[in-house]
Image 1 (cartoon, rainbow, N blue to C red):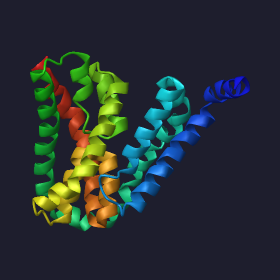
Image 2 (cartoon, helix red, strand yellow):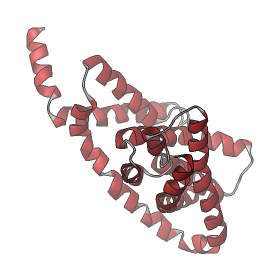
Image 3 (cartoon, rainbow, N blue to C red):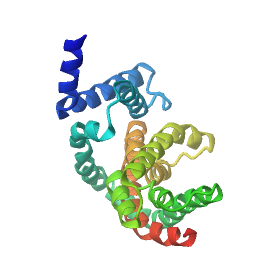
Image 4 (spheres, rainbow, N blue to C red):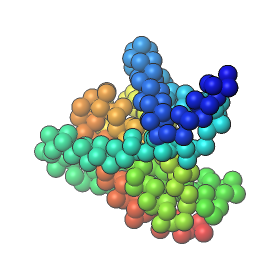
Length: 238
């Protein structure tokens, strides 16, 4: 047992162990997702987060230590976001025809996403740094973290809120949109992308290519819109 403890102490300080743990957790989550017939509530990201949270708790590993290995995956968020330009290019003609509805939906969704979250939090007595961390939670992670830092929020808390927002959207979006009988894949995808950023966009691509393309558009445009709108709305609650 002493030898095992010494080995674990050595390995846990290196980045390779936590990078491997992150990839293994997602692989298990994805396997469960496929085994469940791609049911939205068996989300691979949600399962991976839960597995890693349990592992970090059981091993008493600080998040900073874990992130030394996971930061490579974090870095890939940027290139993955840029790569969404490819399906957008394939659907450029459709995007042009829907330009006006897209802009109207973007403005409404961005204001609602930031405003409703801040209003609910303020009603429960939340203020200060937590409010600033909450404001950009519907933008994609790299952008949301930068906005949070500029507003005086906690980037770590913002990252957690972004992930929770994305997972929630990926799980509930398809059943909810089916219940509302929204059949237009452009509208469905754009709604998911604006509200649930990268995780929701990945789910939209699994459902329909057109929905995925518009989800990518929604995610990209909402990142820009949130950078401008979130500070204005936050100032109303300070």
